Image (cartoon, rainbow, N blue to C red):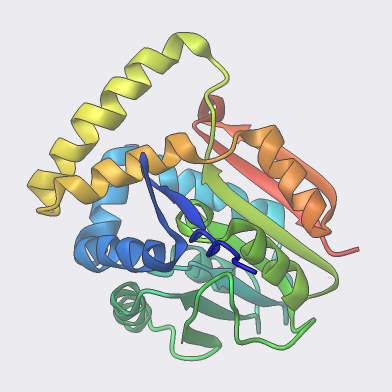
Length: 252
């Protein structure tokens, strides 16, 4: 009996639909291209606000002595460095699928004198090489929207947490002040790619980043996805009028 071949699964790459099998490679090229200027661009395109957003994440996480963190899609280390500075004898793993980003993170760690308590692992957030229940906390900051299979990444974050473990996701979200949307759209689609072209030499990667924000779920939808993955006590906080939202969930 003839059976039609299954159609390849697709996902969003910015405003384009691409096969899941090519999505990770396309995202990888973006971050390989921008890694060396990633931190500078974060400062420029957010006016430094990303530092406050990440500090808010750490304040909500409440690091304690001996705590162990998995920072997923941890990039150049911003969240992990803040975490380690906030608690004695804490340890952290920066997991990111981009070796280029991890190389920058290693250099930044050495520059800060962080030689102990920090590991670097090249891994996809949707397929982590860590044992079950091996971390007290897991974070992902501005990385979940770049994961090919978001549901798998949420499931993996839950799996690696100990019972009572805390998951925090910091991500661009939906503005809650409608009057700001035209200005925000103009900045995202005109200023941001131009800035990326001038500073990072790559306007297209920053056009993708702007598009990926628009394709990412709103606050309520992401909270529902977290609950479906098994997280309990799911909440979120809007930061900067909803430009960014900080989602929280627990392994109950």
